[in-house]
Length: 63
Image (cartoon, rainbow, N blue to C red):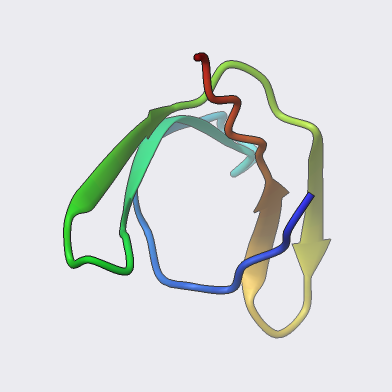
């Protein structure tokens, strides 16, 4: 799995304790097109002191 650090736009809902539950996100691909991704499951969620919340998601392509 390749790890990429790039800005995304995300739609999420939050618990009262501040835990984020992302529903979908989108990112801009190399050809300047927006790729939409529905989040099916969260692999890892951890708090970080300098960037807030880090969420690890996997995108599975069918085909």
